[in-house]
Length: 174
Image 1 (cartoon, rainbow, N blue to C red):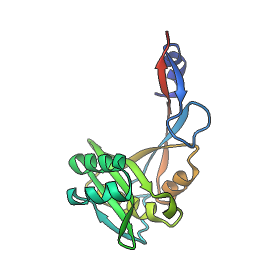
Image 2: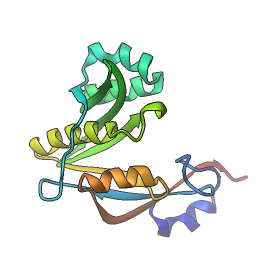
Image 3: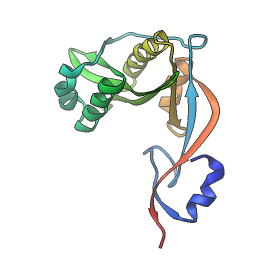
């Protein structure tokens, strides 16, 4: 929801949990960001490939069953890229929605032991390159408290759109 709707929503729902583990409090503030051919600066320093159906078993083994489902959805409705280190899939990024001229990026993940090495930068770069090649505007939302992700997206040329979303897990009052 947009910030101006929070008061109305809280009349019906009680926030019980934030949406992003790095967020402070029970409400997560997401910043909407986008990039395009005029601002995008790709960096691919790792082995990266477009993920296909035959990669799904490796996805659940190397990453998680939840990410396998996200990748499968992306393969069916969009596309996904995986990053490899020593032949193992250790990072992924997905686009599971194409909304007219927008490619919605979701599911950027690198296994914790491999973070800080540029793998997410590599998979996001490949993902965004394909999106732009297809004539889409890559867009995402990221928690304002997720500083590593914000740094990554800004490095790739994503700019804030000025749209801010407030999200939380909630239970209905009463």
